[in-house]
Amino acid sequence: DSKAFIQLHASRGSNASPTIIQNGDIVGTINARAYDGNSYASMSDINFEVDGAPGDGDMPGRIVFKTSADGAQSPTERLRIQSNGYVNIGSGTAEEQLTIRNTTQHCLVRIISSNASGVSAGIDFGDSDDTDIGRIRYYHDNNYMRFDVNAGEKLRIDSSGNLRIPNDNAQLLIG
Image 1 (cartoon, rainbow, N blue to C red):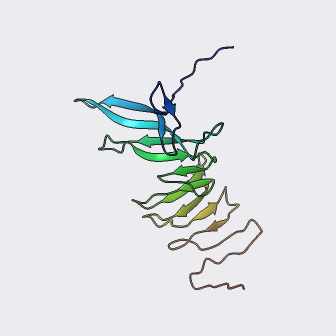
Image 2: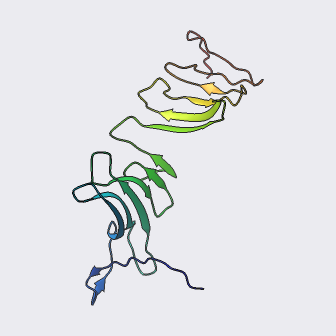
Image 3: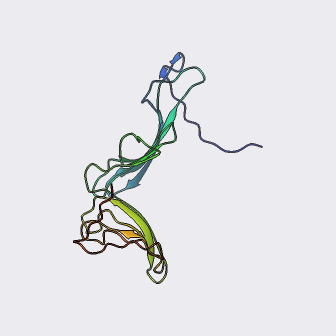
């Protein structure tokens, strides 16, 4: 059973005398370009790179996804899948299974689900320009669980797990 595939080969040295590739070397790139009215401008890349020290029977690899921002034609790293399976969204190396990093703007991680009535469930973390900083929520038609910070509620659990401290002057210190 034969299938179509794309192969990207790389080595150091020459075709006649190849030598071992090194950590960080780019093995291949898929580059997308589009006509901007004047020329074909680069808009996104997928790089296949060596991600560690290679050796006989050992070739660690990573995939780096890049896109160009509005007003630019130079792709910037947006997502990286490392040889250890860790994923980094932003730029740089993931320290955990999933790392989300933004060094130029406020970073907010948001996982939200809303039904047709606008009832939402979600988890928000991070730093944002809005007043929802640090929100953890699950409302799902009034089952509740909500902890905001700054402009928000600051705790509630309920659907008979009770525990509610929405008064800004209230304190509960344990420990």
